[in-house]
Amino acid sequence: MDAVRTVEAEVRELIRRSGLDPAREPTAVQRLVRDAVADYDQRSMHGGMPVLGDVAGAEKSVWDTVAGFGPLQQYFDDPTVEELWINEPTRVFIARGGVAELTTTLLTHDEVRDLVERMLKSSGRRVDLSSPFVDAVLPDGSRLHVVIPDITREHWHVNVRKFIVKADSLEDLVRLGTLTRQAATFLEAAVASGLNVLVAGGTQAGKTTMLNCLAAAIPARERVVTCEEVFELKIPLRDVASMQCRQPSLEGTGEVPLRRLVKEALRMRPSRIIVGEVRQAESLDLLIALNSGLPGMCTIHANSAREAITKMCTLPLLAGENVGSRFVVPTVAGSIDIVVHEALERDGTRRVREIAAVPGRVEGDVVEIADLFVHRGGELARADGYPPHRERFERAGYDLPALLAQGAA
Image (cartoon, rainbow, N blue to C red; front, side):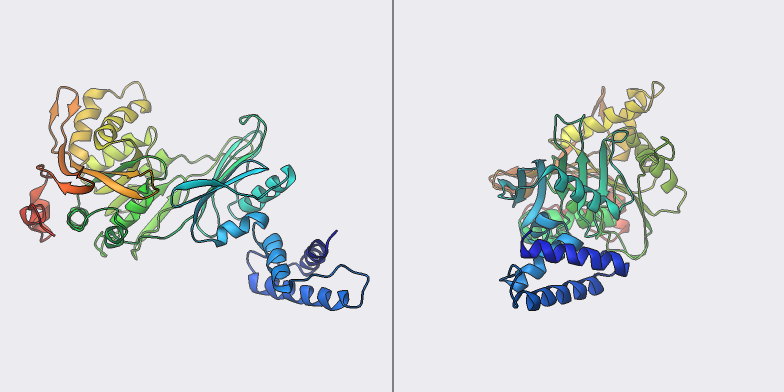
């Protein structure tokens, strides 16, 4: 056992004896680590023990092991790393700027299991044979997803999507080049005016960030209720009630699905409802809420604004045989006002590809959409369409024609 491993073992024993919790008492544990490393360094000078060498590096390594996530902690500390995942113990990947790279980190099967258990400790969630999938949020806000055998072929698959705040507002997205100033000004006005917004895009396209930035435009006096699989949204308002789903217990009881959260949200006096992402039958409950006059927003996986609307017309059919397209299609047309489609480009940048309006008209079983902004000539340019509910913009104090005028900034 080398010097650092020896100190790690000593620190673990000291933590056990003292009853300290690294998650709740980091300062005390950090002091304990520092004292233990200094004590070992002093003892090693008299011979008979391996020398530490880099004392500061030893402190960092011991701290990462007992209070952090061991060999993975360096990626949590690196602000340029957006995501990390483990395909097998010897194949650990990270993503920087949307580009994946294989790291030199080598783990063992036991280390992967120990890291997952440590990550899940604060969430109260579990992963085992009866529940081979788990979603959880780490203390720093990062999202964890784990899948274990026999769902996977052999190894545990671990994915951590770090919570990196690059944008808190639409103005920040303009600075990052995600959308133009005119488009940002229009979206801010649309949200403030109470229009319903659907944010579409692929995995890692920046949908949650966009939703957070749109939510920042909600008037401060409003009460917002959010519903998510796991907590990811960070709404910068004073009156926010947030709810997340719950896994079933070991007995298979107590599960709280997203659909239940949407229903409960309506009983909490919301001025707005925000759903992190719709994937299944909860889309029906959201549509019903929006159709009742309650403004809201959500995200959905789709490759274009048109596909997003098509998917919103399809997902509610999963709610049951008594739900048909004759009800769903016109409800979508009357409930969704704006669709923002965002994409992850080849160079790792995230850009809004199009912003479309839903005027509320249906031809056959097809919901009509109108292009407001489209990607043209390498940038987001104004198209010819107009959004619905001009009177809402006027009541909120916005001049809609001026917002959408060609060349307006």
